[in-house]
Image (cartoon, rainbow, N blue to C red):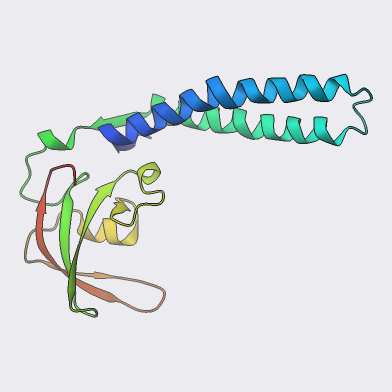
Length: 158
């Protein structure tokens, strides 16, 4: 299994991994050493909290290293396609709201906190793959089907 991601997505994961290893891991080592200095570890809540945090950090490091080792990094500026594929920046017309909006299809880790980025694996992302300008798509949503029209798409970093 590969994890498709944009060049920017890979940089974000690289930066997060570096922070976890160089900052978070070192801080937890210090916290553990301080907690050990307080004596009896069986009843030392600071020690147990630090160990739990250490476990979480090491798990996150392993997860990111795995994703990076299986990454399929895609430079979207080099994509030439007449259909929507991973990395496309797509302008859609929402028939319910009678308004247009623009999104970019990216990897799952790149979506966090961004209103204009959508995972290629999401219902909207899956509905868009392979479509062209002018196509209508219907996305199954919990509140009912949502209809969109693909107005345009490009392969540029938004």
